[in-house]
Length: 280
View 1: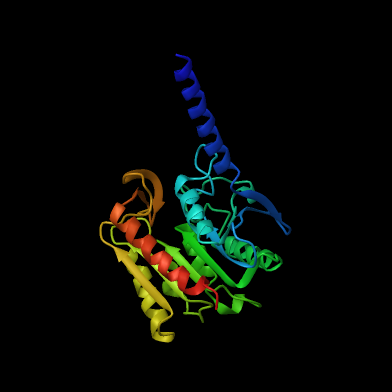
View 2: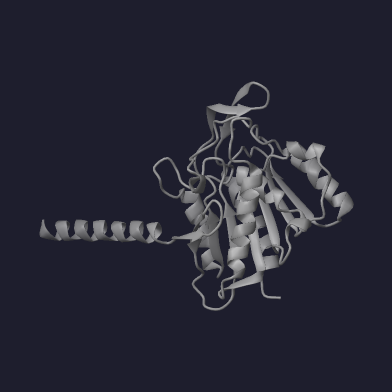
């Protein structure tokens, strides 16, 4: 009986230690400005000037409905710090006193992609002040609303100093680009799309990629995944969300993971980032 209690206590202690280590893996940092921008910072394990990834959350925000980092986000951060890279996540919504905006229509949203674009530029400027960051090896990776933000910072004219080394957009919304001119890209772009995505469909993004390619050959890589719904890199199964507004009066989308698409996209992501974040 005593041995069993000892084993149970050891298991609980281990579980608490793991929980605490995950909770404290990120360090909250405030970047000065208006408004003050909260970012979560996870440094690389190696010393010296290291690459960094700016990770951009989707419309649900940086945290789940329990106020914790999503497991998927923790997994990406662990993956990148194991590679020797810093990770920084701007908290665009909490910094402005809001949580999820997923159920808001575009007209209802007070936090626009343009606000988040400025958050990325401010975060990049903050990274350039750090002695442990190599400013020539900074990548931007976004998901959904964060991927739309990543597309907004593609424009080379926005970067008065060092532009990012690479930009990755997981299932962004690309429909708004039909009415916009193609800009000079600041960096190579990887777009990861789901063919079954009924929230941010793949077709407009493929059209955008073709426009970029015609003006700047080789600057964009597109990978799309059959049976991939919105959030195909999640572990949770696909489910229907009826309260998400899409288009003119339509509501409801499918969101959830696809194991094949998740693994294939991670391989593509690794190869792409390694190409541009390795030492020159």
